[in-house]
Image (cartoon, rainbow, N blue to C red; front, side):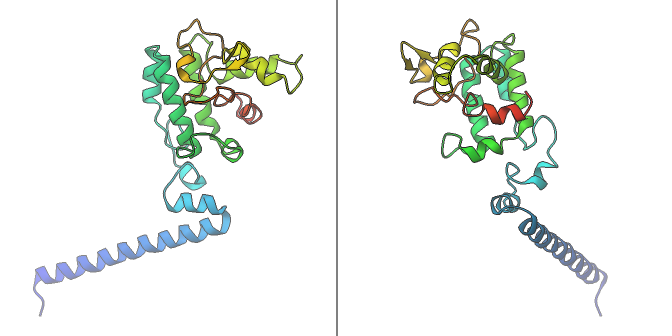
Length: 215
């Protein structure tokens, strides 16, 4: 005959087994649903708890980001007018949001899937802390103002307007950028890695997609 302690232990073991069984059943159910209604990339994101590519997880995100990004550091850098640090932090955030940290750049697929709410937050922080001179909206306005240029001429004209192109060449290093408020309008944020500044982050390669985000 079992004593009281043995009986309690058996009850606890059975309860734990039920909890574990319920958790396993839940995981199987989520995996089944994900596999049925999501793309393979989204299914993998959901099962790996990567909110960037999982609609289910994004729906539970709160605060400023749809995918759990933290903008505290970017906000602090911009409030201190540390535009160089803010430019670097923006680049890191963009790559993380796009799931392209390893590649170091954006591709067409990642552009189309970029979370609009997060794009709006980054843009707002830049605008608010630069008297409206910096940010993606400033770059979009400049791009859209270049209506007199042919499509093949527009990137070069844009580069001159925002100060990414000088003396018939694109800037080739973040060290050539200006991190002062007196820099040309739309100068920042710019891509912070080595290589031509011709693409920026969300300048003309992304303008059509950015427009959808209503910033």
